[in-house]
Image (tube, rainbow over all chains, first blue to last red; front, side, top):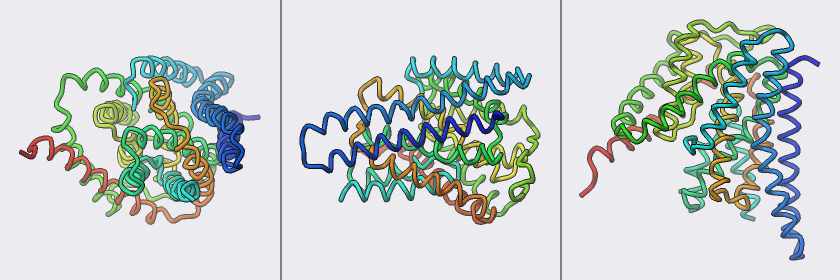
Length: 95
Length: 259
């Protein structure tokens, strides 16, 4: 599998699973049985976590895939972006 | 009923956001705040989550079909995130209204140039999908500025970086929008994480929007290669005009506050 396909797979899987979590959470709440509301909350949290993690996973996969091709410059870029993003999120600067 | 309406709004925003590379936040926040009377403090994080969804849903197709340039995205992301961090530090030192006013004028100029199609390669999807960017140093400097402006003024990166790639780096317009789609997900995800850690992300309201946005972005990314580039550019120019007007308004109201 080439790098682009691997990146596409990560993005597609993340989007699909997150979408499924959110969709099932909506359907669960549409059922008029109160105990399912808690499950809907868990599913929404899982969906949001998946969505947030997916672009980060994409960066990791891109860095590894390009590194395996010997394109170390882009692997370094991916590592620097991850480090900067962690700093930015930690400092609360991003919007 | 509200869920269905939110899914429909998400479909529209996701589709258009995926085709134009702008994420959809510029559409969603006004729709949620003005149309559905959602408070701004919950509309902004929800729209950011939708930007991540648009990026993930659309970029999968774009990367697979080599429409998004992964190397260019990584190169510009380093500069953008650095600029965003610098902008965060500068926010306390500079007057954002003056910068907003200047950016508003600049965006209107960019919109006119894009609309008229001057100095820009109007290439449809190139064979093999690989487009060679020129003026990479200019792109890096421009991305630092775009990241800084995003942090200072809360504008999304897409409306700034697509003209930069297209006009400054001579990247074909569709490659620029697809690459922008890939890039916006990373920075928006970091922003969403920040809001979530502060407990300011209302997932209950965001759920139907995300479902709609994901479906819309997948559809938009399938449709975009078939849409003529001049049409995409005109719609994008309209977006840039709206953003420019918003910035002029933001700058103007801060410079001359009401008594």
